[in-house]
Length: 125
Image (cartoon, rainbow, N blue to C red; front, side, top):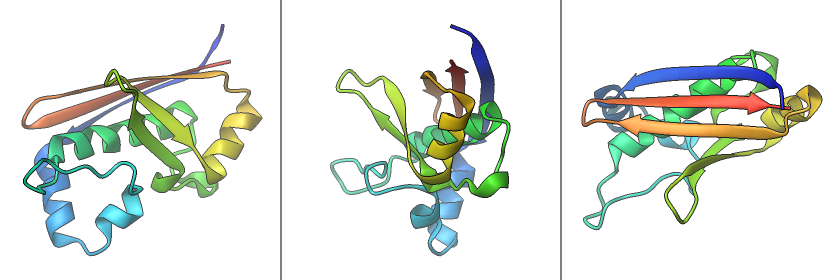
């Protein structure tokens, strides 16, 4: 197994909270409905949204494309296994690029505090 790329990103949870509240269509541009979760009171889980955002950014870094080559945030869907472990589901241009790179596995890790979230992505053949 050889490493194709590694990406890491750090996000201020407050930045995501402000974007959701102030920027029209932010949620729809960045996240799919599968990714948006609320707590039992119907409030957004901003630390989770920030962690997912960090993973998306880390993935772009790992494939060395950023937003170039037509990749969008919604092409990288960050979900959780029943165990809680995060994983990425790729669609659109991100999936095409991953296939062209010969991606075999995408390893994902998310960590957060109340204030910061980090995402790590390791891509292998």
